Length: 283
Ligand SMILES: Nc1nc2c(c(=O)[nH]1)N[C@@H](CN(C=O)c1ccc(C(=O)N[C@@H](CCC(=O)O)C(=O)O)cc1)CN2
Image (cartoon, rainbow, N blue to C red; front, side):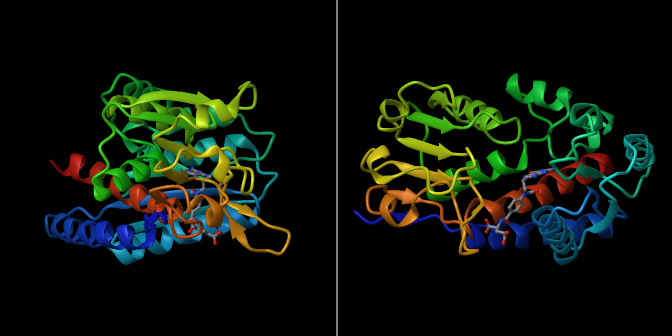
């Protein structure tokens, strides 16, 4: 079997074209969607993601602001900026690029963002609403993954879904969304005893653990749908996911590549959340 490739670049283009049209309609009524992105430090990957977010905003006709701080900035300075952005009517979405340097209390920073502008969906209030099945903003990466299923016509009802990884950004919200779509979920992590037992039962396997090419063909049930959320750099400088793509694509029925899978969809769903925030405000 050779898996169908779930192409994030193609799906992202399709969705972004629709967002641009909606943003133009909103602008004609006097509201231009606006996103503020806060970057602390000099992590190269974070710089790339933030640049891509700002560029995606420009292409979709959104207003955006990038606010950069050196790695040793006082958390109080960032909190003050967030308070200003909370009160800024041109800004509908605010995000703080993660990870933050170690001297920051990330939860306190995320809680400082107004829940109405928390387009990452990481504020405790929004996270709680998602758990209750009544989300205001869905975290961008799992939101993008759900779009793959919808676009490919993959019905999740009654499926066995296994998520490897329990982060707040991906694993936990991903599991909740799969469950709410009717799948039976298992969340595996570093303390899981028999990982193979779980992954080999999965109709839907989501790898979000952050270890290069960790998921091998023998871990995958023939015909499974495999979603690779990992972004790792190999010693030769090449980018790869958490899944051994070449081997697993011979076993799976559908698979996301890295690069060009979940990554572009993460930024696309950030645009979706920012647009929704602006549309809500303009009602
Ligand atoms: N505040 C947030 N911080 C972080 C998030 C997030 O959703 N909100 N997620 C990740 C990083 N991330 C977005 O911020 C992100 C990661 C990867 C990509 C992407 O498009 N990847 C490309 C490859 C890019 C490359 O060349 O390095 C791909 O997979 O094709 C977009 C966004 C952690 N922090």
